[in-house]
Image (tube, rainbow, N blue to C red):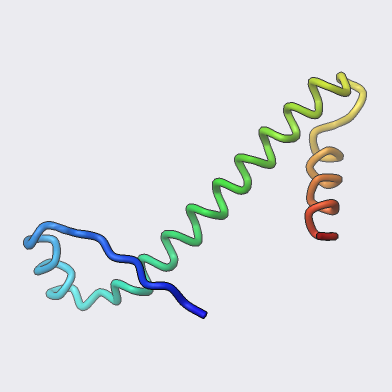
Length: 75
């Protein structure tokens, strides 16, 4: 299933997009996927930092991130 999203852009930008023959759907899809990925990574970093604060310095960040990823993948 797919959803449609829309955005208003200035006329000049639309002309530039048309002149450059840019596939708007592809660019928007890629940009949104990248943004979602980056936000998920940031959440993982924050979760790891929070966990490190709770556990103390005895556990390395990589171990925490790995454990969080494994838990999320099991869902």
